[in-house]
Length: 129
Image (spheres, rainbow, N blue to C red):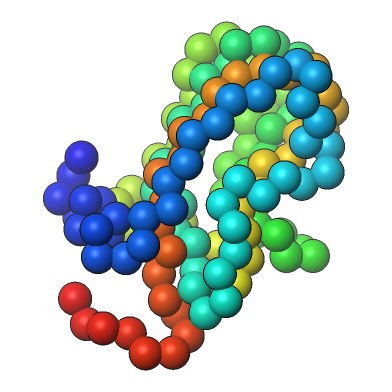
């Protein structure tokens, strides 16, 4: 793990997560994978998506706002195997106070996901690094 990424995950609050989903999973309405925290912004550093079941659904990772910021999208009918979205050690900032959701355009896909991310306080008192 690069030093800057390790520093961000240790200094700020690490909120990385991993999960799997099967063909019957329904994320056609957004499913929060990292919960929102008031006064904090989620910074997404990496999303690793392992496609195990191919289907014609677009996979999207986005924040929970009414006009969402989209962090990443995997094309419908993506080939089997890994897809990596790497936003560098400082990550991709979502909207302050928003959760990170996984949404798909249809059911039927399957795979596993590992998200490397951290919460960074963006409102209120911050302690300098």
